[in-house]
Amino acid sequence: MAKLPKFNNDDLRRQALTHRSLPNHNERLEFIGDGILQGVVTALLSQRYPNYREGRLTRERSKLVCNAALAKVAKHLNLGQQLYLAEYAIKQGCRKSCKVLSGALEALIGAYFIDTGYNYAAAEQFIQQLLNL
Image (cartoon, rainbow, N blue to C red; front, top):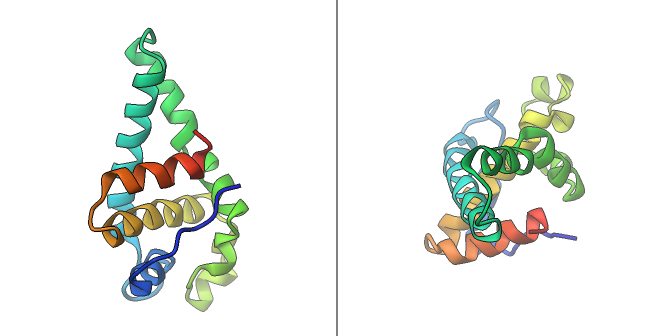
């Protein structure tokens, strides 16, 4: 089972877990993490399945990086309980929202990428562990 890595900069970790209902939220980190995640999964699938056509690779990637799949990983990591949320967001059920959980996981990937000094190999290893690839 995957676990969260140790962060050198705990402020980055906290920001990654901060919902947009609060200041200094995770949306920028989510954007970075989404890009890294897409790149890593694309590279891994293309290496593992050299005979798959582009359409099949796209479908396989979509299965791995869709909100539902990422939220499932986030739930295993208990991210919902670690999120920083405004009171109204808690009342709206954001701790269990697939979109919020998957976004937080992407933000953690982005934060880890930055925390490691923009180390793509470290992010790749983290993603492989998270997604069991």
